[in-house]
Image 1 (cartoon, rainbow over the protein chains, first blue to last red):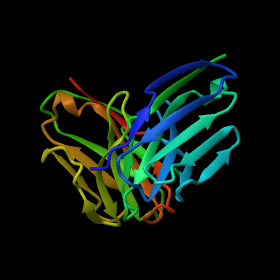
Image 2 (cartoon, rainbow over the protein chains, first blue to last red):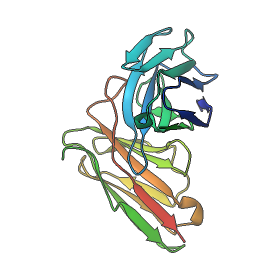
Image 3 (cartoon, chains in turn blue, red):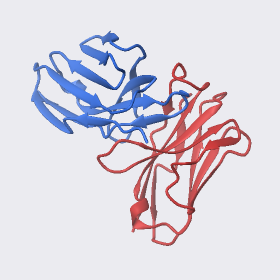
Image 4 (cartoon, chains in turn blue, orange):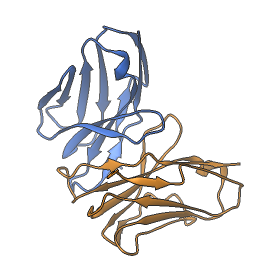
Length: 111
Length: 115
């Protein structure tokens, strides 16, 4: 079983601060995705990273896939209250037909 | 709306009752997944369909759990003789194909509480 560990589990910060969330595994993934989930809703896809070392930017969010494709990070610049939510990383198996999710990082951004 | 629809949104069952959870995927999506999400945790894979074929059911926690998609569209997840540990949000997701370039679209889930 491929496991993904996310850290920290909880993060509470003030508006305007920067933060980084980590997703680590001992397994290699063919690709890795980041989702954001709000209470009472399903996860919504933010980004997919495929190539080792790949960096993708989505406005104030920067996603990086580790060189060995075993880990990833999400960096948020100048966090805003609207960024509050549960951030989930998920890795595809080699066949690309199954996603394994990490346990999530619950982010709260206070105004 | 054209999203994934799940019903009911909330279900309360007494221990030992059977429940059936429904998922209406996005029209034309061939792949359908069921996940279980415990409170404060990430989703855990239960089962996967491609059209009407159940290709992977390795995540179903026991033989009390059964899923079907008889016509390759709507899917039902059935839990027999519910137990308290079955309390969770059950998420359904669909995608247009398979593989990393076919993103999953999730429904809002069914929150099951077993008392």
